[in-house]
Length: 502
Ligand code: KIV
Ligand code: ZN
Image 1 (cartoon, helix red, strand yellow):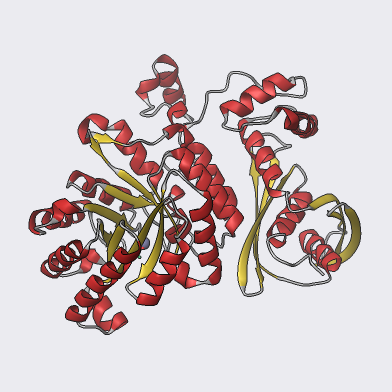
Image 2 (cartoon, rainbow, N blue to C red):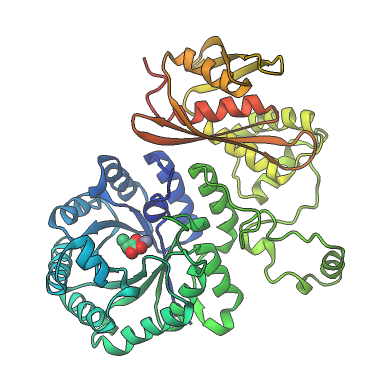
């Protein structure tokens, strides 16, 4: 068995997705879950890119132990110095520095000659090595580079002290056999390649990131980079959960030692979707809502006779426990606690009464309470922690073109505020009533509402994106009442800012 290092870049390349902005608290929450999942490296951010990123990387480096914490930097002295400073308190710090190496990037973007790029690469690695013993070099757009130039630069950065060399398909252009060939070429031609770990980093523009990553691993790469749910620039990065489960399912072919707790995959995916506000498509491999559902009669018959007829993965292996008990208002605390534990939620004894009360409130409205409801129930609890709570929302609509009106009661740090407003429709009226309470306005960029779970009383899951102080902020809210869900989402987004502060 050969060790493969799992490098998670959800907080750096994943956060580069359009519309995702995570605050420190959210990044810490995801980092803790990544530790539970058992990744080897967390790329926590790009410290020189903004004071916010610097603060996040510094906080993660200080608080998250038992895993390598990595920061990205360009091959620029100032970036490397800031990155080193951010990582100062990390138990296992790594600086990830590099530069673009393809002709189009060097000529058109950097306006540097290959010689200058080569010199900058070596200088960057040497500078990073002054601070930390673990330095990863990325050769951006390696897939479209001249192979001989790539070999030369990789050899030089390893000689300069790089411990990991990353060969990205930055624009997601490769096919699996071409990407595998590139890794083989580097392995065969870089004389000192045995002194570094070869890392792969694929983007999904042609839908081949997972396949390309597997080809890279087959060719000898021993670190794979990716994100949870495959989030990232444009069409995203390699989905780590897909690579992990491909290697797990085909372990006799790959002979790879993963060291990952696969049972944390579903919980990690749900958390990333909730915190980023980017939902997982129902048909997404491994973590989509339908990934383990059997709909057609022939398939259901087959699975009932022998699971393996249509199931290549036991859902329990990725943390989706089989459900034998249907929860309802008749279920007791013990049944609820048992199911929550199976779903990965540790409820402390002193919290159980409160969780049970919320569960009963939901069960009274819904009848049967499904796993999806429990996830949202628990997710909602985590969201309403900023001293803000929607107490009630009432809406009046008269149909046609007449304006709608809404009254919102909001609790802020124990005090109750009520206001009402009219709007172009009931949701607009709800948001305007909240604006009146805050005494401010904000630009709504996007709003979506979908139903979670089953039945006429399914929960409404609202997501809003608002622009405030030049930042896009995402908020989520859940309730059996869609207006309340919308109000919660709006307040959840704005609670991450100073919107409600005088
Ligand atoms: O895709 C890419 O090339 C990158 C590098 C900055 C590592 O994300
Ligand atoms: Zn990337």
